[in-house]
Length: 108
Image (tube, rainbow, N blue to C red; front, side, top):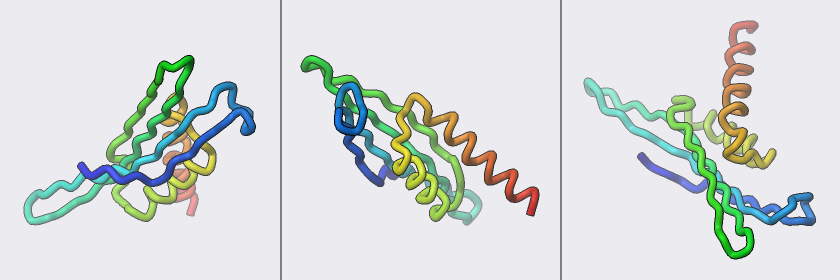
């Protein structure tokens, strides 16, 4: 699996955060070789790092194989990053995004 840093966001008290924290967004690429076919699937990992009284707390959530389109995973990563999605709500947001795409496809 290939792990590529997409973006890093830092939130401070000025942004409305109680305690400053960093969020890193990674694109994950998994390649599968089967019967002379190379297939890449893409996922995302979000890592939130926060220090409280000298103790570093790290939250991580990984969702591999969200889609098979590189362009689409970058669009999803941009949406997550622009909205500063953290690991705690990442899974629900991905379900909302992917279900909205399925609904649009079935209407068209």
